[in-house]
Length: 421
Image (cartoon, rainbow, N blue to C red):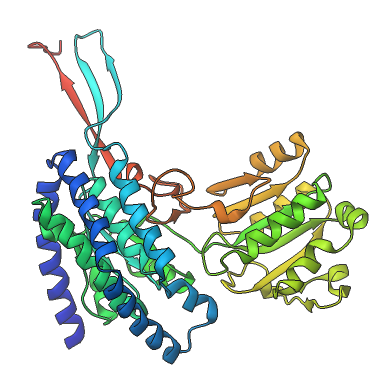
């Protein structure tokens, strides 16, 4: 109880500071926000040794906690990943400022001129696990969209997140913007998460980014609106009309490029006719790459596979594991994905236009792909510079959430002494 009281007091203090900062940010010139992000990017480069040293402490903590290899990979920073964070900050900085942009405008017979323009949401609360780069992505996108943000990273990434957060704060300071615009919860205490979820009047929306356990907790306990970011149970369907060489390349990339991200393929569906004609090369490639292939039915006869259990379908492994089964055509693939998917990302591999259209029409996942790896389910790859997550809900934001998706709108109505009869 004491921990909860202290956590509520902490979040209340941070929330009040964030609301004051949000008021200032809503009116901040685009040039200042740009300068803050460029300054933060410079600090990432300048402080790289400090950030990597902090990350080494987190990696040690993660290993002591018994994190899987895939989760350790999500946590790890290196020179290339730091360059990616720096590049992401610069990319967001160079995007058009969404605030004040006119979405639509029209005139009415009454003489009124009406505009719908983008405005900030206010204060965001972002709760995430493991990946310290989310600290930079979420902070940058919140700032670009004129929102203040309270960040609560995973306990295992605390030191890395603190080091990155310090760079963001320095960018704000240099640009003469309020430092409370981007705040990081300075504790591993899980009571802080509960306090954020019930901070009505201080936090306008909660954005969870993590596994099923985190998202489930948020959806159960939140008294603040939530942008749903469910787990990435991503499917790849190899159609009977797929090019076999392309299928081998795409499936291998979709599973193995990085197994610990939400866009990694977790289930492989193969059309019977494709398998009969082209054999098991797609699966043999995965096994050769070190993937544990949990196969059902005829596919379980392939040497090196493991017999799948019922709960392997509809499961996010985030590891070198994939579930697979044969299906009879695109309709059966669609039915499987509807039953077991999380409406994140699905890909069809086919040269048949009509089949691809049926796949796109029959599913309602946030991202649907054709002849492309699910690893492209990423805001940076969509040209957004960075993302705060992949929203799988159907209200407000959907798919990669960038700066534009973190805005609301208001109507500006102009008359000339116009009165209503």
